[in-house]
Image (cartoon, rainbow, N blue to C red; front, side, top):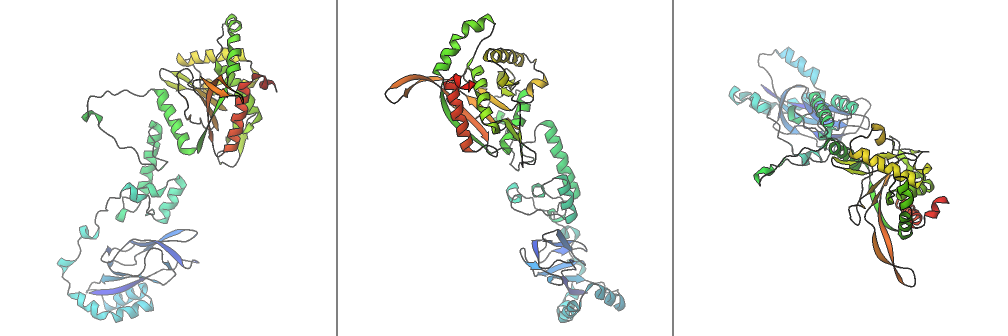
Length: 446
């Protein structure tokens, strides 16, 4: 025998007018006892409303976005009841699960209930019909749909720091289970350990794998360990830092005359003085005037750590990739001392003799392509540092002095900075001061 039963919003405590964020069933769906019908969300928690009995959904009375309170009508169910059940037990069962309004509705719909008594057993929904396999969800759709999970699973995910919107549920109606969350965490940890966690935490779709051999001959060359590790660090910085690059040019005509004049004196000390030694000293002077460039954000991004020491990293090109050894206490060293240390650390980098301590503690970095070429580029900040200076090849250019054009040796400079710490005006002032120092090295003594 079939009966039509109303399903009402149960007691939801002190909450009133709770928003429905997802309706999980539609007309014609077959549900079992305790199957979730909808998900509600208040300002304190989300909750599912389970079905109090098994049956077929007849009419859904609510939709996503509606606000409901206790005893509001959710939907009506066609419930199949056994004819062998005693009137007393049937009445008792109905009384325990229905309100007066439900009983009234049952009496009103007794005619339609009588009609459904003739339904044959062969027409009953099979288990396969009752639980159809979930339809696969595309990655683009998941970004716009709310996570389909119970409050307990949501809490479990929050404790592990898992974004449920990125999971594909394996439960009924694509419901996210505890096992789904655990598997996601497991895969994330495996990806991080192997260095392949490209899209895990960023929400960025992964690049598709392509079989290039179908287009022609190929060769597989493994990435060096340095490039693998460096790639992870740079990718993390790219995803987390809002970076801006400021471009400028410094007149180093006089600096170059001075550098060449030191050639014989430096040779007696077995030192080769390059423009990079001047850049280190000039940056140290400019940073002393602009201390935010020698800082790092705290983990909660609420404060700045201002460093009272100044160690500058210098990018070195090696056969295995780029490494950035650190020159310590730059502001306390002279030009010849810096030149000697640059030569030594560069040699250790190329012969793989750097210690781990040589790569730690940097406050600011310099990446120079001057020996190769180029006119400008955008170096990436080596977080937790907040800025990096890029340098390309100097060139002789005509510069107007107010009366005439004169040939001047100009050095292109590219300052990339973390915009959360340094704004555009600070970056421009820093570059103006740096260019002045490079244009007249006497300013380092001011």
